[in-house]
Length: 115
Length: 112
Image 1 (cartoon, each protein chain N blue to C red):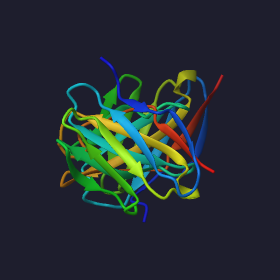
Image 2: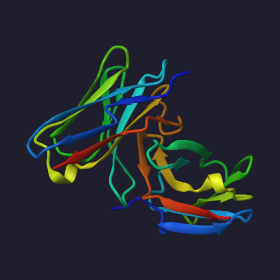
Image 3: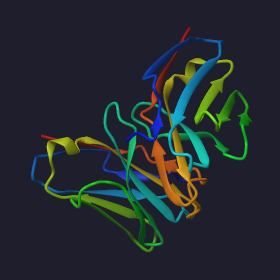
Image 4: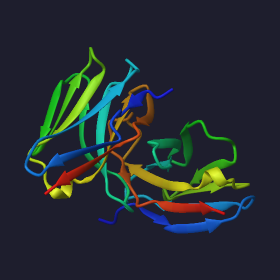
């Protein structure tokens, strides 16, 4: 069974640009969550999608947005990039919307570097 | 406001001995707790979880203990093996809100 796939693995952008990251969940998983990880910080929750609807959103500015398609694949977009957006962006999928009790399965992340 | 805290950024343990990783939380509404393990350049991998109705859950070499009155949980690894060297994250959720709240992680180093 294929795991969670994130593309691209690495990305270099400059300030002011925008970027789109992609996540393909495990087949059959309908919930996709996005996280930002910076050195010394835990995973900071960005948002969670279930059946193409955003169910939950973390405390990030509106420059961070996402969407989910009918096949459960998800994209995350960051506009007007800032130096502080340099981070590892992780996507996780789980079977359904069932509180936090469903273990999430993570992709290997996209390492975004802003110059 | 860190609702989930892992106060030890790193921990070094001799191979074969017990590793104990600690996690404290402040939100009494949390009712589900999970531990994840992360190797460099990989995403976190689910390790073990515990519901607030239990105080212990065991899976092979891994045992998680929950002390609700102290708002504290710990992960015990016995015996520790070189492959256990990784960053360990604890996470918590309240059933009323799907969002997982994560600690900052503890880097475990197993010495040969």
